[in-house]
Image (tube, rainbow, N blue to C red):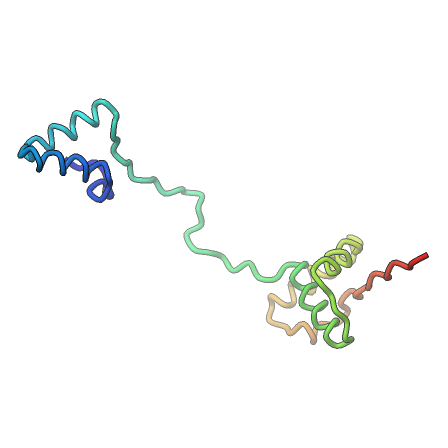
Length: 135
């Protein structure tokens, strides 16, 4: 009797077969498994149904306005010998207006079309945060 694909390797099955072999009752194996199933001590595994909503193939999402901004900010920082950590990049990005974010989306769309980030014109300006002045 089949319980599940992995049941033959389970500790429960090994214990049952050990005891049956020790006492010479291997012929009772199917009866014991059937009884264990009735008592719900063990249970059969049901094959999983495929989710119809799950995508069949992963889709290439391409660049987003955030990744377009990140690409340009990293290059800008390298060219200007500035160190931008993730927190600073997030702070700069959070300060952008809706119109500037739409411009970053335009840049992302151009990147998705195959353009190089350096060849895209009219990118929003990277506004570096002012260091906190000590009083």
